[in-house]
Length: 322
Image (tube, rainbow, N blue to C red; front, side):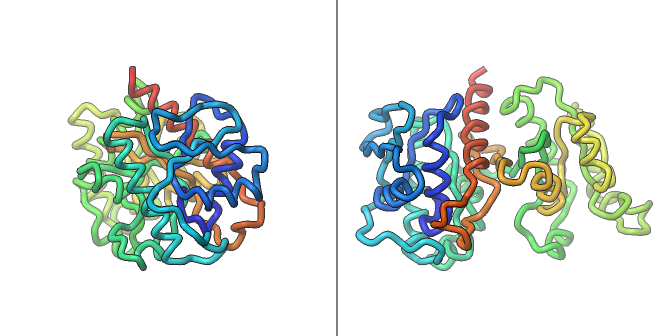
């Protein structure tokens, strides 16, 4: 469900008001929060409470709802982060991961949470991704953004730039390349993927004049991956790499830091991109946007990213069965 004070409930009910290819969704969250969103944004949608996921009835215009935690008596106000809203989001996340690890569902698609609001209630993780990885006991995982014809994997995610540069190392880059190769083969059914790795510095460091991370950390990781048989090239200057990716020269790129990946994705697919968590034992996708408190409750939120995330999750589930 995500944070009930943000646009999560709105985009959920809007998305489920339409048929989504290959998806049989069940919403895990709070009944009152979802009922408010239905009344405001999707009045023809029928909420059908269920106690077990096996009881879900997958019909058009039906929202199967599994209550997470105790129902609230007062629904948190739209547009304002609250401890209650963060707690409701956490209950939904915990219930979802319990169900997916038990094998009751094939995958999870998440609506946005507010990271600072979550940490204010004692949530010890940077976001959804780390929470799910910890619950699954997964140490090797990553974030891939998909949209606009691009697939971009991130070496580092939510780190300040100066800390990212300090932490960057060849093993981290190598593991990200490995995760990318495996995801392209098994999640996206690309049998012979072509992977490119971005440089960190302008012009790829210009032979060390503009930085030496390429020489000491990134290029050695690429060479090590090639020795393992992974079809990867680079590092390439980032200012031209993503054009080559868009033109189809590569199936995916490995970006070194957050904005290096997110700028091209959001330029080409804003409101319709998908965040895929790679390396988990279950499928997890998410929207490409935040809680958007500034527009919550106004009826103007676009459900395109959630729809794409649901469809992407369904496709990955089918690919993993092959």
